[in-house]
Image (cartoon, helix red, strand yellow):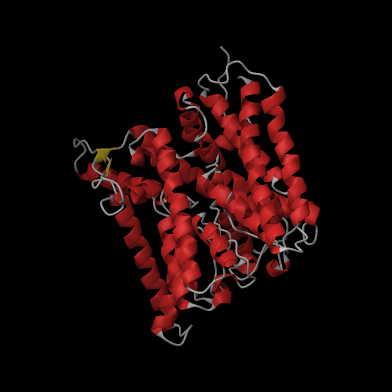
Length: 488
């Protein structure tokens, strides 16, 4: 493995992080008397030096040669890990509620777009630091490596290899395009929708700062807010419905949304079998939760129940985690449906986390084929998605991922109970971190945070968030947790 090449490309990702720190510092200076502006400036300088050092002093003649898959894994995992570590510097320099473990947790939560927080008073933070907090989620939403892979020479093919590691295989299959085209479509859609949402929020009466930051947080499906009460602080039905719509869109494959505005009329979100199934699944959950809230008289009218249901279901399905209600006091049936939503989550090729609806769709079709084979053993059943056959390897990958995902949630829940968390909090914190959902239930509910958890649980939760964002196997491979061939 060419370690010098790996170090150089990790350095490129740090330069991107430093650039966003500089933007956050400028935001702090623009608003004036911002105590975070100088810490952000120094942080940008520190991270910039670490990112530039490999570009200046680490020489590598094979830089333009195609990197291997093994090198790609180390670059992707290294870029994400160092981004999370260096991303905590502004928090540490600012102080306040940010102890070392709290700063690490907040940084990892932002970059992985989990949206879990240790802050008890978000509104006490200066605007520069609030913008940096949103910037971590916005970079993490589309993928740090995906962003900087666009500037790599196309002839080297390195961007395609890195994208192949960072973007799930099932998303690449669905896109039916080259890796570089895939990232280009996703980034274009991501930036465009962020800008559109920011303008629409401004038209609905929010200030520019709140509009831009909440647009960044919505499209990244992170759920960080500038307000202690999250979206409920605005007390606006139009704002809630607009954000609900964009949370849902952010959980759909961006390439399919992109295709709506191109000539590819056969491969857009309206023709997609997976997107349609996902839409009807979300719609069913919205109606079930709304009816359950209505029959339990949780709110005054069915319209109010439906309003709460639409927002919270879209928030959980997309793994955004915004809140307009305390879901801890909702009926048990509604809570169980939300837990189901937090496992299913959005589609691959989106910014949402979780298991991905595409994998469950493949597993569902696999079960149908198995049942069909019981009645006719000689019949050859081929799984097709969007009219195209899915290879056995891809079906096996989906099943393996689902099994490992559930096992990781269970192991995380058991670990949390060892440190004194009650069963509801332990389990929900585990699936919320692995799925990058953010809020769970119990002590980490929609109107609560993770500040009361023991430090060791915050650290393990940070690891779970990173495992979930990198879809587990990449990080485990780099850590060396995989079976090795025995020497004969």
